[in-house]
Image (cartoon, rainbow, N blue to C red; front, top):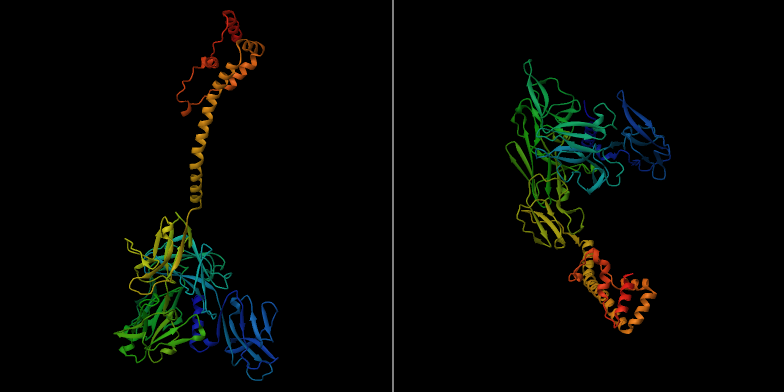
Length: 611
């Protein structure tokens, strides 16, 4: 059984190869599309039709505008606009004059394909890593296309490359999604990757067409385990000269896996029995993961395989795209051609690659290598190798996808940070590089002399104001480096406040201590001075009268003038504290005087004071 995605993709490819591709339109599901009438002088009698085949007869059904989802504008030369595109809108359309007696829709036929976005997961070179690609079920007509990536529903970045920039390891709790700029509301269903091993990896889809293949509603989540390797296994049967083919994978097959078969790069039902003399090649695929082509007998068919189907290369570098092929009955094909196919621009079609200064061809035995020097962004495309005089008649099987990327510096968490934070600098690319690279980091155009081998990551932990400056990076052995990017490191706000507070305290504290000591010294000396002065101004008789007349007030005056604190500090370190039972007598120990009195007066005063 063929998957819906495979049918859509190869339908588009078939139209493209057969020459209808220039009139094909691939639009995103949920978006709007305008189909223009092909008539040079549209008349008021022009009508829109869909074309279908029924019992080998062409049937035309007229389209009526409803004013909402479908609109036909006479002012715009009978352009038909279809809003909120659905799968059911995938059809063949034509604009024709109903008054024309001739066969309507004979020319100007438009094939409308409806695409949805899906995050596809591919095995990477590392045993426990995978790469992600934002894929549409047919090549989108709208150009240029800008892809937006999300992680756990949060915006990550946007780029012209459909490939996710980093390799992914097993993170079951992390989800990824993508969208096209201008269509952010039409995101691809979220995916997460888990159970990464050297043989398999499991992908969980939130919803989408990948789940519809499992006989369940598209809006329900599903999990599919993919193999890292897919191979066609040829088995002998009991019948002489007959073989049976099996699609073998590196991990156990499940019902969730959709297997498709190809015969000479065309979609085919699963072969039951194949003759050994069959001059055709066979291959199979588990969803989007393809096996190599095989022949029942190597000398009996023509086949083409590629060493790497996905290549990420740096701008300004060189790349080798290698293919391996076999000739039927050792026939030496006269034509060995490479084609460049821009999937993002169906109207551009395939372009035959010729031997020019930056492009070279090398043929060794049964391998053919395409070398592209001084790569630039325009070299990003799909490359297909074909052999034989009838190569152009073959529908295009998936070739080699090349993505050319430049280098960019990215700061995390941001370009403006505060001292003490952890800052990670990434030498970012638009796709995960296939080879391990050695990087060089620069600060203000000066190379950073780091002790360890420099990678694409540079960590500043903790970051300080000395790290402020313009950073750039480049790959060793390549001259071109990334553009400089400024990192601004601000001082901590609380640090400036603390400096101000400390400076203020250095002024206030000594002043306060000085004033406090002075006040305490004054409070100790003032009672003695006042008492001495008063005693010199009054006579013994007067003192007697005051004491005898107002004994309570005199006590108040003595206690208000002499106050001993309970605490001990530097000021009172030289004063010996009195015992608790002697505290009531302490005022009298301070006030001592010897008036000229008679023994009788002294006795009276003593008695009075005792009271």
